[in-house]
Amino acid sequence: MVEAVGVGLSVLAALALGATSILVRLGTQEGRSRDVVMYTFGMNLLLAVPVTVVYHYPDYGLTWEAVGAFSLAGLTGTLCGRVLFYRSIQEIGASRTEPVKATQPLHAAVVAAVVLGEALTASNLLGIALIIAGLAVVSREIVTSEESLVDVSPVMLVVPLGAAFFFGIEPTFAKLGFAEGTPVLVGLVVKVGAAALGMVLYLRYRGITVLPSPSALEPSARKWILLAGVTNTSFLFAYYAALAVSPVVMVVPVVQMSPLVVAVLSLLFLPRVEQVTAKLVGAAGIIVAGGIIVTLTS
Image (cartoon, rainbow, N blue to C red; front, top):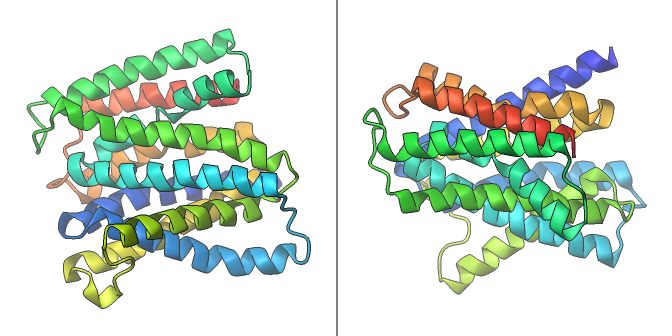
């Protein structure tokens, strides 16, 4: 029964993650990626803070070291990673951004080896080789495919690769926070809170409205942006709930399938916006396989 619950939550997490990418794509056709970022932060905190406060009261297991580690995790992955990820979806599409983002285990493995001194095994290296091979195909498909609906400069690849890098190094900081004995939900709230604060300070420095009211959003983008906040928060809850009841070896392979989920959803719902090719799907599959190998053997 527990295994079935874990698998179900993992599938829900993968679907929610894929749906978020599709909704971001729809929302940024007329809206702005920064608004999607702020609304997802707001929805994350609105739903996660009350649950965390009640469930873990009165001991939240926080130390200054944990706060610092989770704050760094938030500023890297949750802030920089999400900003670049959503921007990339807006510019080159969800079906092309997702496979590049899925290279994050490559960055995570390299950073963990350098920062934490973790050794790279033969299995790690095999997974890394698959990720690099798949990334090469995806990059070529993004830039040169005649079937693409938009012209993409090779320089633009820096954006999704940057997102993958920041998503990849986030777990290194999170591990340091969890080593202090901090519960998962508490760590999640701290890192999202730090990311939201960082985004607010940046926008205020630039003199930009921090969080426009729903009525101020482009009408055609409003519902997609709000729904993206809901699905992103659903992903976080489903993912961490799955990890709480099931081993990593069961959860990660399912959640890592999100690029393929996005490809299917794009074919079904966004044929005029996203151009999904056989090469793209094949390369995404190679990257997913490599990512699973790296993650499960690290």
